[in-house]
Length: 274
Image (cartoon, rainbow, N blue to C red; front, side, top):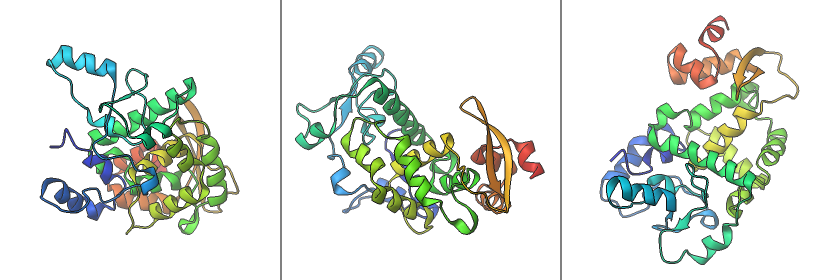
């Protein structure tokens, strides 16, 4: 069962104490919604309406003798194959009109960004949420080490909203995802849900926030308690700002020095000296 549903991905947006509840909804008979975290109705895709990659389908026929819908094809807003870089088509005879109208023809830039989004979501689907580093607690820890969350768990919200919308501007062909990334209200609500230990948010936000924070660190006024270290990200050497409070919080979550260093994207030796 671990190799087929989206359970691991969904759990990335849940508090850790809700993992067993989500699992129970998946494997047991349940009359209500299976997913504990869902997008607003306007942004939700239709149930049982999946997209398909023609080239993936041809490869499946050659390898298995039949074609099937891979779980990565159920990822919300991903309308480009993360393997072949071509537009996905509806597996049904006709796509729901609303979904079809929301999915524009992607540009070359949007194809690359959507492929990256698809790869990150598939990464989450294939690993337990507690190990993927996309679970909401891990994203909060990364935001602290990148300086976006300062002392007393306060987010540099105004700058975050500005930079986040700029980073993803024009990145996606799906109008719903484009609206989510450009709407200050939606982004702010997602940030607030991310920071609350008792709240869930859709895991797509965890992917987007982690992606953004990995690429851009906070460069505004620095805290008096800030610690600066050099790290390598995307092949570039960057200066990262963190704090002793952020390190203590990350250690409390990940338990070991090696796991904490990986989650914070800092070398083990560097973290040990801090």
